[in-house]
Length: 367
Ligand SMILES: C[S@@+](CC[C@H](N)C(=O)[O-])C[C@H]1O[C@@H](n2cnc3c(N)ncnc32)[C@H](O)[C@@H]1O
Image (cartoon, rainbow, N blue to C red; front, side, top):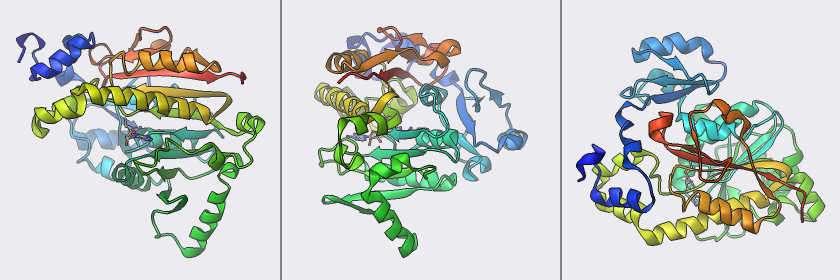
């Protein structure tokens, strides 16, 4: 172990940081990083009750509406307020990534890497009774957790599972008539984009299906370019799979899981290479499903240039219709600029949040 970092982290992780040009001191405030909660809209009146239950001062996060910070050692999951669905446990940087989408009433939003669903719930709360949100993920067990979360917060859900070429319902708890109606509606997925209010919808793609997100034909049945440009999603979030190295809390979990697991799951160079390929594919596919004039937010909880700025550069090179946008809401955020202007980096030390990279793109009308 290296003394200088003051962290019980293995040399292999410190080497990973060095290779990626990351200063280990950004993790030194990990023990004093607050916990964050988001109040379920309509539960504002319960704040004092939550404070009394948690026996601590809950501070409003002045740069992030609806978010509150708590002392680092508070256990959120065991509280009554959490179990009753009055509060969400979600890091402030994650909230910022959702806010960067600039969601308006009536938007149709695609959350391409949705599980376990903290950001999906926030999107759904921001939309209220308007628009729609579709969550996609490849991990069925993570989608199951996502479904449980949507049910807990009464956000509704209709979960779909891939079966061969067709989608069938994941749960059959809903009455037959309702399921039949849903199956019919699904046949015209494009129509969902123009319908009014929709409950969040979860879509599961088998890990080996080779599909990253809904295909164009599923979304736009007649599929001509003019329809794509006018009927794609208004907003797309690509909160991509990554090495999670920005989240020291995640890295510390490997103390229990074993540092060899960290080596295999986080530090392995071959895995990182395939991850950057996946990240670029996820970003490109999310962008393909965006309407002209719509915006996409790409985020990772890695702080490495390979998974962030490099992916952004490659993507911009391949997509003439993509323009990197300034995130207007970020003026008061406690983050730094990434290596590319207009990209943002929440490092744990400066931001007092879990690490996150955020970039926002606008889709221009160029074919
Ligand atoms: C960082 S996590 C997403 C966290 C989530 N946005 C939230 O706020 O709770 C990344 C997710 O990407 C999913 N994923 C990995 N490969 C994918 C793919 N090819 N298509 C869609 N999702 C994928 C993983 O299963 C994982 O759930």
